[in-house]
Amino acid sequence: MEVPWAEGEVFARSLGTPEQNHGLFAGIVREMRRAVYFVVAQPGTDDAQLGFAGHGSGAHAGGMFVGVEPRLHVVALVAGAPGLTDVAVANSPYPAGEALEHSRCVTVPIDPTRFVAGRHRASGLLHFGERDIISGTETARRLADAASEPKQVRWHDRPPFPERGGEAIPGRVAARRARLGVP
Image 1 (cartoon, one colour):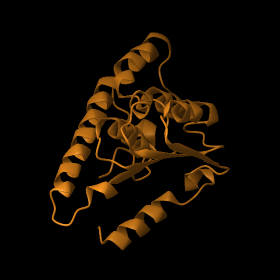
Image 2 (cartoon, rainbow, N blue to C red; image 1 turned 90 degrees about the vertical axis):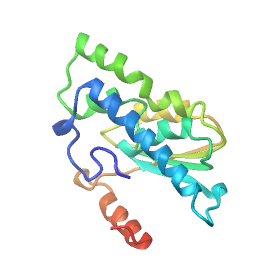
Image 3 (cartoon, one colour; image 1 turned 120 degrees about the vertical axis):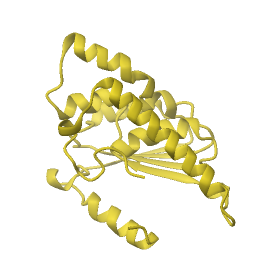
Image 4 (cartoon, rainbow, N blue to C red; image 1 turned 180 degrees about the vertical axis):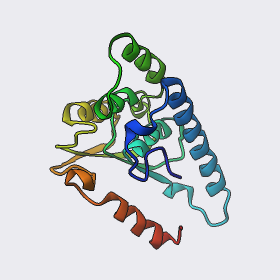
């Protein structure tokens, strides 16, 4: 499943209203839970092996997902942020003042920090870039600090996006899809 901005689209170009984004991410998490029900129902599925990995906005959805899906055993969140408003402010000419406060009020119920703190039995890996301009070190630490144990927090010195001098995330995603036989 792909979340918004998964194919490298610039965040600000498709940023909806806070209400739209709240509904969008809540819907993504509902669909991911449905996917788990489907996978677990398949013959030969070992539900003790269920996990989730998400990058960027996938880490945002995954941060929510791990808090509501008790069947996950491991979760990896890469380049995540503690809240959608943090990401929006870092990536777009975002409103300030009252409009910013409205956005925070609407999206705080879907902030990953609210979910990773109470995640079920899943062990977590949180991986961040020290020079990531999207989440930033201080912002990323808020998410890492909120996550309950057991957890590992890792930092690398390069941002995760190739256009910012970082790793080739789209290439890694394509390679994983090919290995799994997913188009």
